[in-house]
Image 1 (cartoon, rainbow, N blue to C red):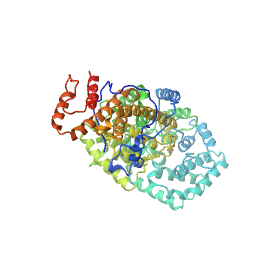
Image 2 (image 1 turned 180 degrees about the vertical axis):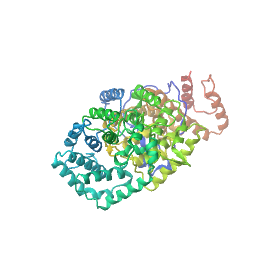
Image 3 (image 1 turned 90 degrees about the vertical axis):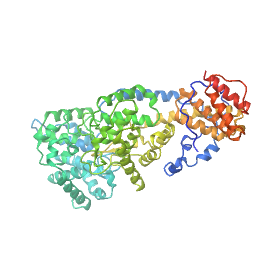
Image 4 (image 1 turned 180 degrees about the horizontal axis):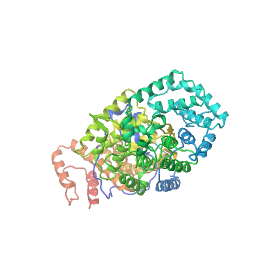
Length: 625
């Protein structure tokens, strides 16, 4: 049974007479063990042994005296400085997109690359196995696509034949794996971009095993998709199709150039924009490519800018890791930035992206509303049709994380937010079906424990989630620098997926546990001194009362509220126990209610209320004056 949550805690408490915090006998239990529910035991396996840990909570050792506060302060200051300098977003270089930039010929008519720095980047970044792509994670779609693009780029300039041979060898050995990989991790537009590169390779005389069944399947998917693409829509309005136009032919560039983003790009894609530059020589496309080649020292990422994405996810990660209180000003700046670019159509990964998606929109809506900004839930109507929700117009499959973030956003619904009610039913059903099928993989990100994150959200909605319990769980789920995102290639967002965030969060949580042990030790002495066990309060229930208080009010400077909550809960249980055993319970209950709501107290106990218990309540009431 979970102790009832008191909604009001006294601002000043004098029930605990200050004493020296020694000896250390009672460690605070692991926070993730108390908040349990019968229906959630399958999701929160780390909470299964709650009862045993509570019973053993009085057998511990004194924590170390070095709390690492100086080191934590240094890390926090470093993080603050980085947040104050946030710009277009930090993202790693993509070999695939860099290859498309390297393919652009000299716009002045020379027989040389327009961006020789891109060619140099390719030469410097081949992996030991002969491939190009993400070095830390082997995803065959990513490696094959990036390697083929780089081989085509080098071969087109008759450069580094040895590196091309090693790249081709890797492709021939691994191309069969394309049919074996998890379908949910298919790269964006792969069925369009990969066949296009194969045709370019054939034109250069490269030997690619096109008769492999996996390749034939990809060609079949391409043909099916191309028959479904409305060419008129492609040339008329910005859609997600613009992100992969480097894989298409027979395009009307006069019309397409009107669909560029304000920065000159096609949906912030360097590969698509480089292809457009190659075909048209457009000066705005040139300016965009030239700027990012300079910014990333020769290479280019798979998408840029990603400012909205970075601002929102950074705040989300700080909140879930439990360290947002250190970054109040910086978070406010991020939220102001997001609110300036909020629109009735929602958010995309960049503020000026003409194509919005429900993932960024849901994250932005939840954070803005939780920080007090006025945002309308009607924005979700842009992503609903005939009772079904989608991430963006024209998508080929649903996304787990997009609906996971939408499900989290709808927890902040106000009365009358009709569309959020529809979204809650749809997203909740989708996520529960995927969980039951064991398919909580996502097409946008490969995270450390996405099933755990989704499971916690389903089992413990926002209104029922204790902040410290959520943080404790997320410390295990957060992958840090190991989390990798899926676009046209694998990419990483080091600003909010890094070891520094995790290090700071763990240090902060350790300090919190140390403080909790100290406070629990003092609370137990108060419990013993007032003989509360004789009044029906067990040590375990006192521990539970403190846990619920500490799991909600965890900031170090709010100790008075935290301890006041815990003591109030303990005294309430003591009084309830006495009333249950009293022959004149109704009279005592009436008297007690009158006294607790009165400004004046008699200093003598009434109606069989034990003197010691009355004394505790009397000093508690006096402390309020």
